[in-house]
Length: 209
Image 1 (cartoon, helix red, strand yellow):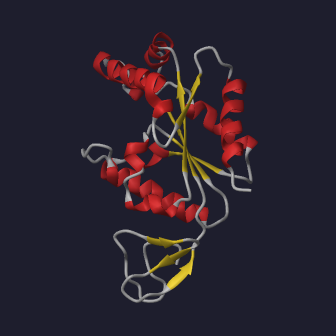
Image 2 (cartoon, one colour):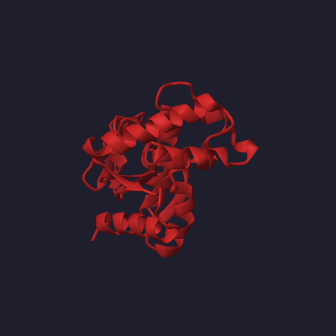
């Protein structure tokens, strides 16, 4: 059974996984089974920061070592909950990433997120750590990038842009002091190679030995 919430012995589905070291446990029947807890890598930042541009390059460089995914592919009608932090969306991604980890490779998840949206979730227990790297930029650079996007992406709205710039500024000034720490890389004047170098170093520095 790949689903870490379903007991392979009795079939009970847990609301919250019970993790004990390198095993999962079923409360109703007491069955225990092996589970590989790996770190999750969250490549975050504001829209326009560069995470989705870096992602494909990172996948090429770390092929065979990690699995790089774009979180917005699951941002569909059923997942777009109006609750602060979008817990259904976040929990689903943690659930999926934990199953991918059973193949022996950590996931690098590209998409806007902050620790407060992942750390309190029951599925967080399925990971040994969650590491965060935020791609940010100077506000004028970020605004220009957003306004240059095609119309279907919806960045013609001044209020939406202002909200993203405020989030960007918050990351630039306060993210490094978060617990867990959010590393920050400024892409304003960085080449794609330089930004990818930074992301690759971040992942490699935290990969299990």
